[in-house]
Length: 396
Image (cartoon, rainbow, N blue to C red; front, side, top):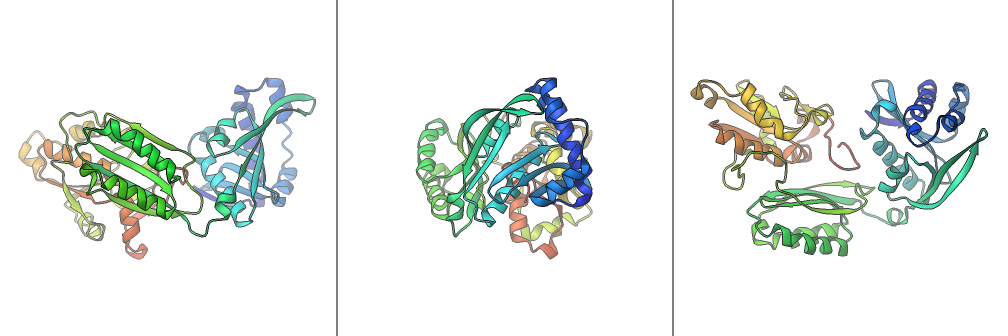
């Protein structure tokens, strides 16, 4: 999926998205009479072509199919903003909104404002918009409820440096993980750091965003904890912060796996540096496995890697049992297995599990795909496509 500006040939698809989304999605919050008045069956394709040309209209395009569109006007008004009825909650709206906000920053627009339906209220709230007022509007004789919302962009416009996005995890015996939650939350709030931090008895896993000083201070603060002193992190940068709030959560496991007595802090596979990864996975005797979920793999993966078609990571042991284990233990012990994931945490835990199952040569990409993309020159890269990430950026 790519986000691009509107082209005249998009008009018919856009008109249908507007009509069909209202009739099949917004109908949850509005009556049939209201929906019919809001989106009549007469689509007026030519009018859409004119309207879209006059505004910054962004479309989400997947191989010629339009999955959604959003419009920005020069005064900061976000006009139409709709996602295809079959692609709700798939990251389409998030990517469209990021394109609109980036354009607004480029145009030095200080305030974005929008009239939001009941259906879209939660989406815009999660992007940092606040409600100015609830109002009743008359559309072709029908009265509809919507909300005027706004968001100020001054904190982005005043910045000369991009936001730092730090991703890190560390397996360790973190017996005091519950008591760490409050001080970490307080520290992050003091340094205006947003993102998600997971704490569990087996360690920490996080992606956070903030300015350079704030991120450096947080990493120093965490490494002062004896169990986390060897914590390593990866960095990327963006002009628009990918999180709107901070969440510090307590978990039983950093990533749900469901198998007891798997401890990557004690036994783990062989780390492979990004610079050595190409050589390893080019060996025809090596079985290369993508340990991520199926929807992540669809965005991109390494050439020749096996997709286990996992809906959830905790399905990985079942995949191993059905596809990699052999009735003859000596036979499956001889297999060379190389695994990878986004940041390294899943394949690290998977490698510990594989060793426990009797596999001997188990490798995993140190730092995951993110570290590989950071360190390996593009002309040498064996990565194909984009890398899915769990924040507003969606992919890298």
